Length: 179
Length: 319
Image (cartoon, rainbow over all chains, first blue to last red; front, side):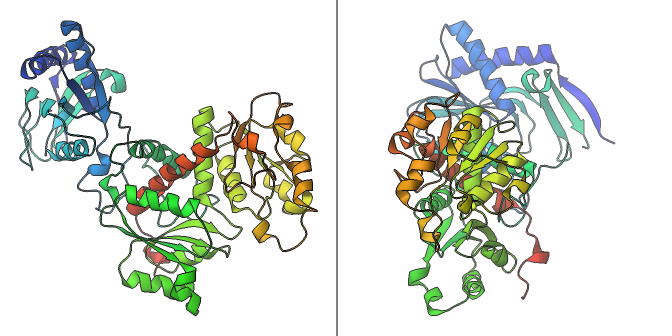
């Protein structure tokens, strides 16, 4: 029987995003050549919120893109119905930019691997950082986040559900044990 | 939530697809359009897949469009043209395909002059089969790219009035359009000389528009078919000049339309016959958008078929 417990509520997510936004500015030494790229689907909304927070503090417009990594997944050759492909749109060139990849949950690291491969087909960023709301451990590749909202220890049967008001009507992070 | 639809093993025609399957292809084609606009127009989705383009009929646009779609998905492709292959030595279609399969291919894109040939092949080989036009039966990817273009232009298909004008009789494009449009809830009109309309066409739930002027009054969009002179063995029309005078879509005729009509043509155009140059190149023509969307739709079809669970029961068996 799966059990569901809350990890972050709306206010806690707000606080985490505030801290993550200021860490982004700090680690990138300002907002020059900064570009946030959200991974479809919930990463896109988190990236937009971070960009708007940074924009307010720094009096700047932070460009924000969306990336769908489906076509770069390493398990696409496995037999099974094709996953839906989402929209990819990057504002302008990546060459010379500091790109911050934003995603909701970091787990095996395979999504980030796919995103890095996809970036290589768009250009050559000067630097790429990884920013995630929840790091749940369980990496299968040598990939680590630079900026993290929270860490939580999980096992393979667990699921971390991130809800954002834009898609789900509310902001919450929940841990489902034994899902 | 219900499981998303899959396409199955082959794409033979739109007649046998459900509205949900057609929507799945159109929704997938959207993101693929963006891939062709990237600096590096290539994604690794079909890396390691081998696709054979088996063309028994002359084709420039469709073959190149499929080839671009395949290459932009990172598949390996081989083109077989009949004039320079064993097919000209009398080998049967199935033998050719089985020999290709013995070399471990994954997909066949086939164009053939015989209606039903794509389905025939699909039922006999294990590889995915994509129909790139079979005789007068269907040309599903053309139908899909027409739907995609209309959906981009109008934001919807449901409730649209689309008139298919001209040589319906010889046109597989017309048939694929008819099925696709009706499944997605559009109203279909047909307009052309009686000699070029199939008998009993009104039983397919279409509005028969007796004159091109009627089509222009009725429709939101015109899909102007090419007069397939190469398929005409008997005297279907008195002369090209007369065809243009009675059925040609001209600027003067369009000026009498109650609204601006979207103009489509599957190509290759007979300028000055079914369509006048100033209409083909006019501001309401989406003919080149159709070509752009063709690559996206074909990428979507190849991507979706490569992941569909193969229907082993109906494949690979002996005749």
